[in-house]
Image: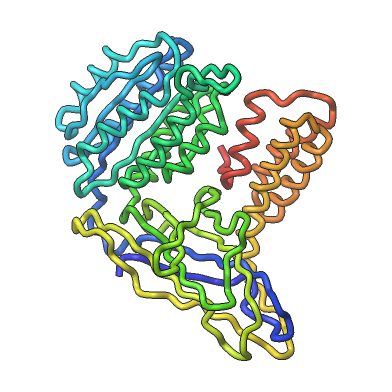
Length: 427
């Protein structure tokens, strides 16, 4: 078996006298590194913003970051590069990395900043290029932009032009369905954080913030290392629940590691619940938290559900493989005594930190600065509870600025979003 699968309830024990109990089920999934002799071939597409605002040092540092990525690719890997401004163009068609020097030269010659920001056109071309090299490879895109994308013009009930954001989300969802992963990199402090987060979430990727140009190479390398560690692709969590056990109706499933993402749930024809996970990294946990409600159950150890992972193995060119079924047990007691799992509670707090920050952002958009500050303070305290001191500092700083009557800058808002979504690493 190439999949490592573990599960734990927030409290393993249930009170037999309770008609309904709520529990969080944490499921940890990863590819087992010992089963892979080599890294999988990569099929990488870089989708780069070359709008006018990228002129000069920003574009120069992005080119340097791309060159470092090319240095890490092997001849069996594939690369394509798409550039977008007011329209999009393929700079490097999908091809094996046989001549990195020539590829670097073509990128330097052809990338030139000018025009608007049509992100969707770039994403569409990038997906097209990725589709040319998917066989036996890990297929991922790095979408970098410093802008918002173009919006349609609405006059009463008529809409003129294209809404770039809507098209981007549609494309990211389509990409996930054909086993392509979309990562997003926000460059500077003026990109649309809602859009880039939604693209990354829908595309099964990660959101990265490049606050200053000199950080570009580091962030590209960090993301590349993550992609290089993928062992299995197109993974789905399949959850079968016993009678009297159900998922919560509101936000029932969330990924908590390595990034926090609210995950959609699909009900299959046999009643099994399926959640797309995407790529599985070697010995790096992907942790999912399911919010369960359990009805009255008989005394003793009871199976409340079964977990199974469906996945593809590109190295063996096999699709739709299934892990062994993993039963989930609860212990029903006549005299209840709690059996809390401290790690699961840490993950519950990580999701709480994210949702508290989301609520703060909503209040801020509604003009409730005091309410936003209070929620950010709460999120900062939650971050401290899980030992995420860096995030706590960012969140408390934003709260303090609001309390003192200051506005949150674009940079503050970006840092706050990233602090909510991930465990911040010391720089």
